[in-house]
Length: 427
Ligand SMILES: [Zn+2]
Image (cartoon, rainbow, N blue to C red):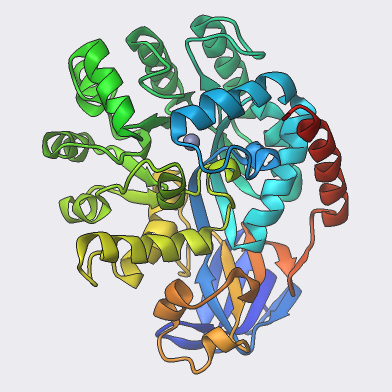
């Protein structure tokens, strides 16, 4: 008799009807109307829709402790007057751990099993992710100016290199090289980061062309727009993931297509910080890989990928006066398989041979009644409250809305303590 670690019985797969899903060693090994076999764990998924989980491709998860601060400010004021000031004072290994756990609670509750993070003390975050059982691509933010973690670009690179050695070969966590942005990193720093990424065959994760002010600043400094500046120094390649990409010219879009650069679209952060609307339908038309990210909870102000997905699908229809600008299926691919593929993980689809990153949604809720079109109703109707079960690499992280690997009460208690400390520094 075939043996499984986990057997999901009777889940409804959109377009395929009710199916059993057999999972072994973290992978989907069998999908059929009836899977015979023994399993260590069985989930009855009758009346539940199965979808691949989300890949949040741009965030700063520990910033969840700064949620909502500096509301209603544009990007540079928000960063310089509020966020950088508070980070300089409060960011520590404890801040990173407690903030990450809070963010991960929210991520799992809204169906996310992979996030790409850029921040400080990422080795603490790596331990948290491995123990909780969530996937993450992690990297130290590399900057030209000094912070608590490093005093010079060379020292940031040294920290990044140590971090790579530490987490390479981990099960769920993989290192990423994260130069912060072209306006905070000199060409020399960017190229040191690129070299480090090439040396270890890693992704490079960077903020690019987020605001019009950034474009003006880079033009003034280097005589070129941000993407052309990065191209001119030889930074771009198919291992580069650019977050935001709101302000790009036609010429720049052709360059990123040719170079195989991936885009992490963060619609809600771009709206909240008044940065603008990225030309995502045009990127998709050109065949550029677009993924989805929430950005940090301090500029969103949540880490809910289901909401982000819905915003993405609707925003571009309104902005382009075209109901087909981004359809539900394209939006779902952007939030799932495109992200996993960029992270070089075979997940984001419920197919045999894929990683078992699956969520089950309860259809016994108003937004799924009557149920005509599961994909459209996921994108346009569902709330994350309907996400009942989340499985990451074959491990059940949430079942019946109950988290299995995190003590939620303790996480909230820590968040309250941080609120007391941080709020006393605000006024
Ligand atoms: Zn960001």
